[in-house]
Image (cartoon, rainbow, N blue to C red):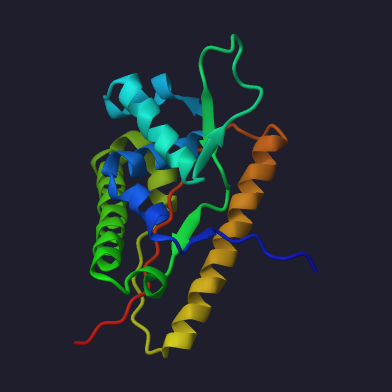
Length: 197
């Protein structure tokens, strides 16, 4: 059986620190959704100068998060970029938070991820009327309160990742087959964390 694809697991603090800059996080997310883009195209979306966006893309490339998209440039002057892995990236706090600097970076990146996800969901909520009934009826927001042990929570997370991966592969296969009518980017946010009441 072939090995399941996994996100790039960050274990080096210098790599994680690349995402302590909110603009880099935003550029990575936009690039992931677009598949490939130029610095100029991304600059329009984030309202920044193309030179600044290009600088941050190069910094992400130095850490292995993005790479040049081969075969996209028509004149050789403009560089096209893509994410290095379709599986994305992740990290475990225990790998990086053993020092004050590591704990600060983990906190900054984690909070940045949550902030960007909340902003994305709020933007959707502000635009629901524009999406129409079919999309708003299909959209969901759920919360489940469970009683689990750490190993069970980890297993649940792996199962949810496998499920999301299956649906991503299904969407990619459909797009590759030309089935693009009515297909949109869909963001699914899941969190699993302990709490005490």
